[in-house]
Image (tube, rainbow, N blue to C red; front, side, top):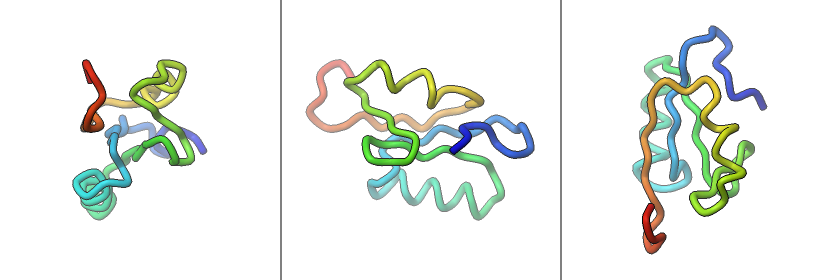
Amino acid sequence: MSVHAADDRPRVLITGATGTTGSRLHRALADAGRPSLAVGRSTPVPFDWTDPSTHDRVLEGVGAAYLLPPIGVPDA
């Protein structure tokens, strides 16, 4: 799965993509034709707040971000 939008527009990164607000935002952006990348620990492009090795890949091609830290993660 490429993290770049097909038309080279910057993507909107959405963390917490499997949750209530993240999934709704992802759907709204898709309905508006905006490229986005919805990520979480179990998504095709994995992202984990506590694993820095997952951070760089999700930031490629991103121009904006919706960051929703997980409950209970210190310093998130």
